[in-house]
Length: 70
Image (cartoon, rainbow, N blue to C red; front, side, top):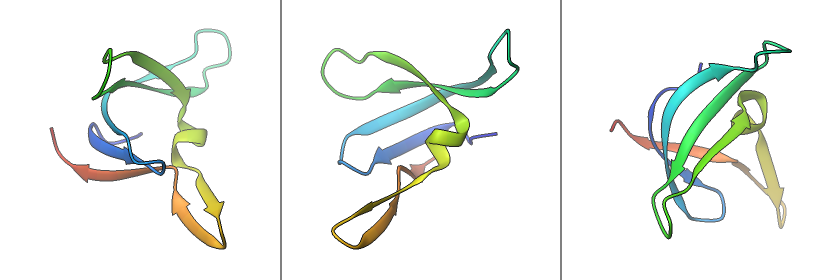
């Protein structure tokens, strides 16, 4: 499970994790989260992808970094 709270995407934008969910057909763990900028859109992403690391210019970062509890 992904801990609910505020996260920073590796590109700099902030997001709020709202819920952990499961795909109804595959039972894959999903994360429901909200952008904290612009139109404040609601997004869904596989939890495995949410947890991934990203390498840019020889440096490795978490795709989403936990910042604080909501």
